[in-house]
Length: 373
Ligand code: MG
Image (cartoon, rainbow, N blue to C red; front, side, top):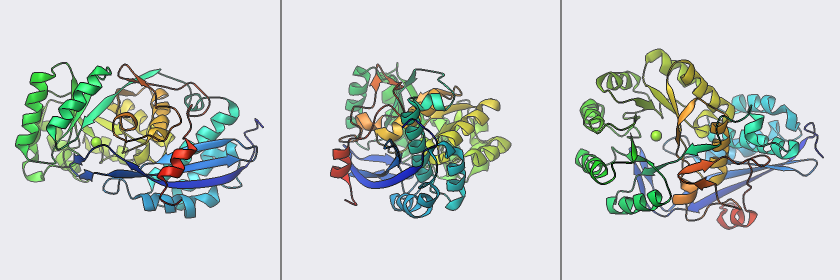
């Protein structure tokens, strides 16, 4: 059946725990052992399926339990029995039927677009208006408290052609950040370096520490202080001559209105898990572009399914010019959930051209890693 007016009849969920290969420290918290995601499968009456992923982080966007409950209890009634063609109406109801839970809404829109694309035989990027790019430069984050392990990771990723790294800073003392910046400048001068504090700096000496980091001339510095410290973000921006990016301060378009009004950043990290879907993520990027700000393709601790959604979104959003950080599926998870590897080559994500997202999860791995099996 190729009719987009057919109804959605199936709504299935998996809560997964995915082992990771190392510890990672950030200004707001640590990831170690495993990260948890929620996978949604929608089935249409003709048998076609669409898949989506919620990738929460409890200290940043919310908890996996909340994402699971949002989908299972509050969003499900607004989806089952409704037509595949009514994506915008379903998303509007999802937006208001449960507060926050943006990762759950991202999973829903991903699954709706994957389903529509499978039925219409079109890639998700085509449903979003067509492509602006075929490949996206890939950044890999350095967040291991063991610097020697991160140096080994740099060797591995540069062998693969990756030319961008993002140093996670502000989780230990200032000297550790400066030592790593000096080592990167000395030993890896050709890398495109970015720095992300993940809100980790104490307001008391944030400007001094950010100035020290800015002296290394990274491409940008991301979110040095807590999300709600808008005035301090604006002060830091005025104190440095390196572009300042907002991440945790801007979840969706509503936050972007305030960010623009208060001049807190030169650019924004755009994530479908923060905005609550692909279309709202595009809105954030378009608002940034209209105001003369830059946009970057950020992510959470995601598996390949969420990376695919982000890749299609960025492919269709010319305003996102600073690359993406969809590295976890290849470099951080012990094993990804996709039936074929998330496509990266030569340091770039390769945007899939197949129907829907282009690649599906492997059902055996969903079963293997499920917490609620
Ligand atoms: Mg960030």
